[in-house]
Image: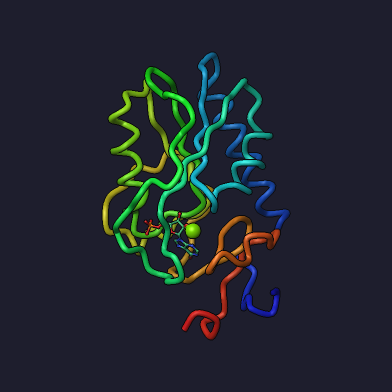
Length: 178
Ligand code: IMP
Ligand code: MG
């Protein structure tokens, strides 16, 4: 599995430090508010688990699953909800937790969809961002790292459902998907 990775971008240690900083920031900014964290399955699951443990105010969590690339490495732009939220978000402060923003199509769709449910506020937290690849503007409120236009895996992020359990974020060798 590790042989398929050409370079480690962010080690466990570096990820831990960054997530601690994000958690502190979110803790401060949502002080006195009731926060619902919404993890986007499956990629954000690892980040979500670490991030919520760094947030020192009461939170509730929920998950949503949207259609992904399948076996390809390109976003189709067609987004479908595969698993919806369990609970209403009406009048609640909502934070979407995402693994990576690429074209932005997935999050754009998700934000429109969630906004129609009338939350009190809606913000976005992503671990990784590939700003060069953006096709549609997204306002990111909390971000871990910008990354170059390369296909990455690990720390929850997959290629064809594999590599999610790598404890770091690494670049997938081109031979694997080309
Ligand atoms: P977008 O709609 O193009 O912004 O794609 C967002 C989703 O595509 C993310 O939630 C990831 O699941 C997936 N994705 C984007 N870039 C990568 C990558 O480099 N490796 C693995 N998955 C990715
Ligand atoms: Mg994915």
